[in-house]
Image (cartoon, rainbow, N blue to C red; front, side):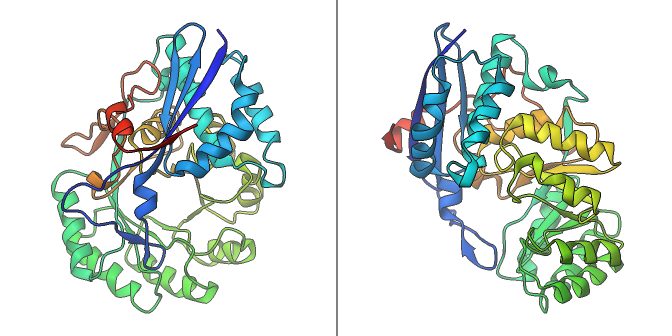
Length: 370
């Protein structure tokens, strides 16, 4: 089987009726993050296709793939996924192309290869389970009451945890975290994601509050490049530090964080780390050091289906992250990931990643095709 073409369709989805774009990262709108997508279809001479919708990126991602990666893919046998990845990775020198573009293409390649075997991806990777506990992952909200209301809602419908994307204000965040803990009770798992918005001293002070509140982990209190600060927090705090989500270098930068214990829990996903293969390698590296990896998710049903497949093949991870409200983060797929009443996400049955692009939506909101 040979790759004959790579179809790239940029589209800008509409927000569901009644919803506005939420904020993250200290009040920044994420409208583009949840609407600006790229549908990727790898075509072959045998009629099989590998498909994915990017987490975001739109036209900029389309140009990156069209100019730098598509010529490299034409004529290749998709069974040689590792060699193709290595060839794509060499294009990343001096950020000539991005690991996000590489990751998007790599997911489509794995989807294609698993389809060629008529198997779901998680079984091709080596299955550990077929359902995964889910936690709800918030956006920023204007008030403490909004966070409390949302946390209680997802607890009531069976989700197995709740993560606060806090305001990133070290003076206000402790009261927020305290109120949510008091509302949901002592036994419900809670996490915090700061998205790198604290200083070292702020992170240390808030971390000590979170320890008393028995939060499960403290995610991205600092920017990833502050290795000195990361090590200080991991050393001084008992609450696990979770990070490495957006650090460049795919799995190659992970050893420095792991071996120096700059994080206690490794973070990654198929988009930000360059694909399915690198995420599996990072998981194995973390496992060899007795550490867990928790997988970040995005705004696309198809990318998150791929993340879920990888999670189901990793023994040293616990959760699937569902960004909420779900209606804003499940665009682009024909079917959504099934989350049952007990708070488990079920791995799509396949073959491939088991999720289909909603091509009707893609054509309706198409910006351009390259």
